[in-house]
Image (cartoon, rainbow, N blue to C red; front, side):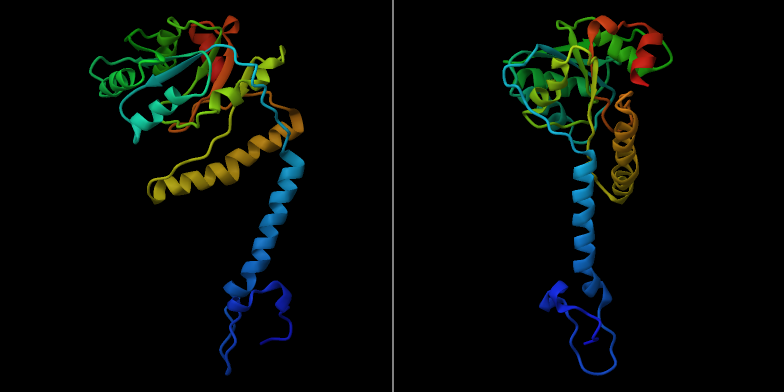
Length: 249
């Protein structure tokens, strides 16, 4: 074994101990060092970017969730159903569809049947208010909104039962009008895996750096097939082309 290798940092099972001229397995030798560097990076990121958050169980304003749908995503039922399993006092879900023959309609009707205790509506309208059809879909659904706080959530998003309770917390501060969320990708196949790597290593770190340097002066808009999840006070949310485009940019 080369004298330069320090056994304290290398598990015994990772050492290539053989006689002769065979070179050691450097991948195995460097793995402990790599692991420690990754942990150090995690610690630095936690110190620099993390902010403590608290959840006030008594703060749960009613919320309307707007979900524009066009076609069927993979795991469509589970994605939509995850919003129906929220541990939250009062909320409404509005599914917006533009095409009367859209295959997602049957899935939404099944969701409505399976969750009778949840306030769910299906809006089918081909009204167009601008060049962005998704924005038109959202505007059509927003007409039926019952509550002042709106949540925009793409149809391919899946959340945990405590999602609403957590994401609404910043709105306790009266100066906060929009809340945006980071997300992680669930991949299927190597193409989506490469896209997920780009999001995790380039896009999301850029968001954290921007927040650290200048604060959150923006919300993450639609990045198909990822979420556009933005909270806003409906008083500032008017269904006109200019306002919708600006809000979702």
